[in-house]
Image: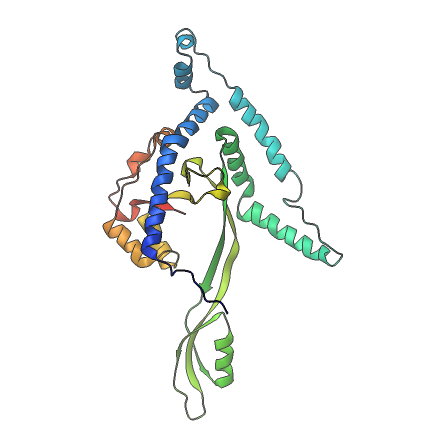
Length: 292
């Protein structure tokens, strides 16, 4: 049997590498990508400032702007959406043999429910296609949400067979086992859980939140691809309590490393109220940047 020659994971080295990737991706976005997004948005909105700069002499005599690009997008989106959501089924699944027919129908109904109802797929895809047409850039992110719900503590005076049943149940968490009495019975404290949610999560990522390695020619070959998220301290603590983030790291970030979020020029144009929410008197509302 061959030995594993891989080096053990060095968290400090990994952290340094990721932080370097983030800085490179941020710089690339700020200098190369954001100006292009801003220009395409101005063309889509038929921004007078854009036409004044682009056609300075003409703008002295006329307020001419063109809504051709806007009209094209508004015409194209419904046709594209109809190809995805115009039929009865969101997906088409074909089985291999007669035995697959019933399973296929169940699977189609499940995917249809997850896409259209649980994820509001029509709106998600609408935003995705709009970004793709307007900015020549668009992305959706698919993750998996699994939520377990554990009930209150229960007490039981159990024998050996019952105890083994509880121990072998994956949805039973034994908290305490007492010493056996004269009859071999034990006091057992446990709680029972259930799977509350287990489904895909589909979300449209704003083009201003996409970051990737500057040397990559496509997403597949990129060493670093991430979604920038701006969250509150309260969100970080809740994720820490749920076990998503390391609680010690969360508290360290909140107590020692508060960094005010800075918005790009294009983001400011889209929402000029952003700077008014950066400095909060309530520490739970302080904003932090995440990269996922």
